[in-house]
Amino acid sequence: MSIHLEHYLIVGAVLFSIGLYLALAKRNFVGVLMGIEMMFNAVNLTFIAFSRFVQSDQPLAGHVFVVFVITVAAAEAATALALAVMVYRTRDTVNVDEIDLLKW
Amino acid sequence: MDSTGVIIAFYVLAAMTIGSALAVVVVRNLIHAVIALIGTFAGLAGLYVTLSADFIAITQILIYIGAISILFLFAIVLTPRSGRGNQESFLRFPALVLALLVGTVLVYVAVDTQWNLSHAPDFPETASLIGELLLKTYVLPFEIASVLLLAAVLGSIILVRPEPVEED
Image (tube, rainbow over all chains, first blue to last red; front, side, top):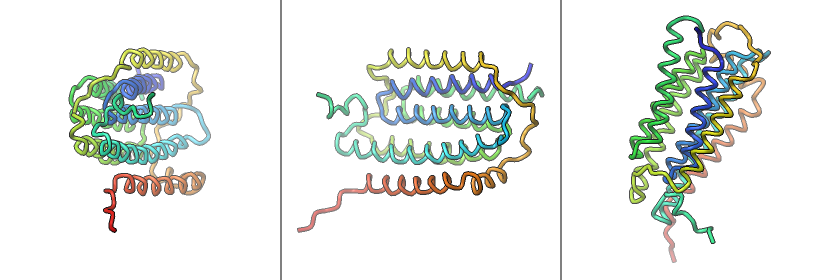
């Protein structure tokens, strides 16, 4: 009994599905963002696991990719939360099913 | 990856990660959801350590637990009249079905595929190697990432800046 690539991939897949459910089903915008961050993290785990276990002539490229994913995730979180605060100022809510100005 | 310690660590950390991810879904208070999300991030940092990714584990703790969780807390306390509830919208059942389908497909692919495995030993340390790669092979994406961060910082500041007072 030992830990293989599949174990990490299954953890990543479960985490990705939970994040997808959060992003699609939560009412509060901050909850949706939590789901998106969780999906980023699941992908990062998959990258690191492949980087550790799979044959490659550049085994650390996966780590570098994860560094970029974390950078983009940080930028995305800052911008999206600023947007949430701005929507709150005009509409007094951040519930995604009440932000429906563009709906006919 | 065969020693008993690594096996126990993997199962404990995986249970912690998945358990707190499920807690984010079920708790009814957004502040508690952020705390559970911190548990998920911490469990993932531990999983990175078992994969001998020391630099990424530290980065995960610094950026996700230290910065992004605090941003979430700020966003929650800056929107008080919207409530602290963590309810689902009317899309709950389609989302559940889609998430289950995606999860099933991903797990099936992960288990079914014959991966091209190597039997290399653990990385001894990764920080200096990642630094070298970032400044040699990947220097262009590195610079683009810095421009992206600058744009995101400026954009966030301009978005949440209070309206300037009109002066006649």
